[in-house]
Image 1: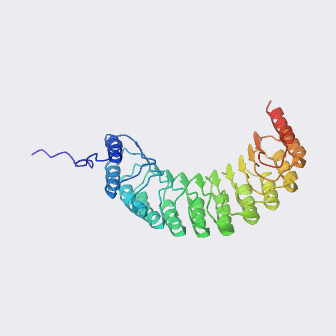
Image 2: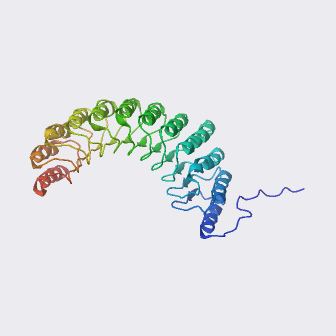
Image 3: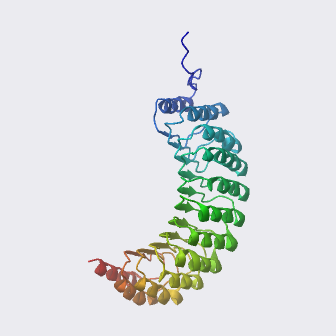
Length: 350
């Protein structure tokens, strides 16, 4: 007796709403072998639609590689992590999972972490996990990092603008220090404090792979920035891009960064926009620009530099062996002063 074909997860569903019609069309494409599922911005009408999504993802294991649910609105945001966890356990082929701004909280993050812990042992393919702009606190972040540290494939971890503090940042530091694959981590907009920043700085200095770290708007201040300078900037053999925007960094922190830049093995891009840098540290910045063999881009926009800083900066730019871009907009600096720096940069490039 011939066996009947497997039942499609879409069997028995009907397109009763516009959302259901669009969802069915995109899920049908996935069942036909499409590798990418993009539902970004979709408002789910019911738990049934969420269950349907998860069933199709599970059924498409082996072909589905990208799932983008960024900015989706779910009927019960607190349950979305648990719902997706089941699909993750079944679909080992997903390479990229985007859950940006979906209302994910600690409970959802822990559910995802449990699923990842189970599946990473089974060689899950996940390389990019985007969880920015959610409500994940310390408990959720500790769970996620504990799961991801088992992965030999995770490369990009986006956790910007969540709700974790020092404890969560320390967990991320452990992931950075021990990961065999992670090269990009975005943590901006989390109040990690000096303890969290210090742990991250040491971890970055130990990582042979982490190339990009964004800790913008993390409440660092000068003391934590000095730790970043001493470890991440001065000692990392991999870090090429460090973003420190909007951290209330003043001259003390910037002077330490400048000293570290002079000997940094790799750092090519440093973002210091929207801080509290004044002319008092312009000389130190200029000396770093003049001697660094790796620094290609420096963003000082939105600080407190004046025309008095421009001669030193222009002279340093003229001597720099590497600099290609210096951003100064939003300072108390005239167009004439900024033009003198741009002219020196253009002359070098010619």
